[in-house]
Amino acid sequence: MAKLFDNKTISPGGTIDGVVELPGDKSISHRYALIAALAEGRSEIRNYSTAADCRSTLSCLRRLGVETDFTRERLRISGQGLGGLQAPRRSLDAENSGTTIRMLAGVLAGQSFASTLSGDASLRSRPMRRVVEPLRKMGAEIRAHDDDCAPLEIRGGALHSIDYTLPIPSAQVKSAILLAGLYADGVTTVREAVRTRDHTELALREFGATIESLNKSVRIHPRPKLEPRQLIVPGDLSSGVFFIAAALIVPDSALILHNVGLNPTRTRVLDFLISIGAAIHLASVQLRDGELIGDISVRHSALAGGEISGAHAAEMIDELPMLAALGPFTEKGIEIHGAQELRVKESDRIATISAGLRRMGARVEEFPDGLRVEGRSAGKLRGAKVEPGGDHRIAMALAIAALGAQGDTVIRHADCVAVSFPEFFVILERLRGKGTDG
Ligand code: S3P
Image (cartoon, rainbow, N blue to C red):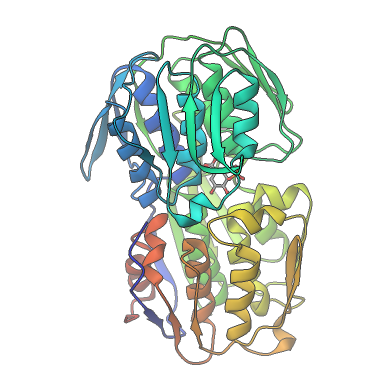
């Protein structure tokens, strides 16, 4: 994970104005890299995410004998075929990345060698039983700390196909099972109550796997010959949401985001923002490499505020910290329920965003499964020294809230943004046309 030392000072104001091309989507990048490694031959991926998390996936793949060549322009991956990964000499380090550890666990469950997967302190405290259980059902032997946490010691081999209903909505767990399903003895089915992001399904299909999605169930056929591909990763909407929120908050702002991923399993956040009054428009929507992409324009808007709960909370799980931080800029505030998963992300996101916003003077009520952030009538936010707890999305959400506060805000250990978006502060400065310092 990024070094924790750098404080960042954000001064309020500075109209958000201009055009941005975002770095590649983090979720899609992980998947393209992992699946390319299992294909037969060299794939080339453009706009691969610059996130530290996606570099963690590449370094794990290298330990498994996969050659990677990553330049500014493109990432080349020499696929080894389904059976071509090599036993790693040392433990595989997923660092801060939940997607890396959970998806890779699925691939490693199908290998004939033993391997160990671990990560940083945050990752080692996150629940892994959700992925261990179905992989054990498929026949993998897995040992975990307290039977739940990393390090995961995986002894894979011939796997059985299963028909599995996800107990909690998780694209990471669904993906791990589908990847293990590549190594199974029959068709593997995953069923989900809430439709989570489907990038794994789309990517597997692009690389030539046979995979069927119907309603909320997915079936994968085993042992395909995966073909190498040339693919372009769409811009990361979950990163773009921070700038969208900035443009909504700061008067006179007008922003365009180009070539952003608009996969319908990711755009619930835009529906919600539009429903509370955001002036957001889409243009040039098209299908590229199986994924929808397009341009988003957004203007400063009066926001009504509103409530998010149930399936909607799961569908915008990564955007909830930013939406919570919009609360003080809305008429009625923002209330979130059904988001208990936020407690087991890179930090306890309900606690860290609540603490940060409270330090800035917001009125916040915490619930076990969410929070309520009072609207404008509770008063204007004021600059403060805030601690994002090493969590990239909390640091970015608080930085954007700081744009609308009175006085300067210091984001402690702000370099944690590199986990998903190393360029965040540089692009923010460019869009404001005036500097933040730190
Ligand atoms: C991700 C899935 C989500 C999300 C995470 C990325 C993915 O996690 O929060 O940032 O790429 O599959 P869960 O699937 O555990 O909800």
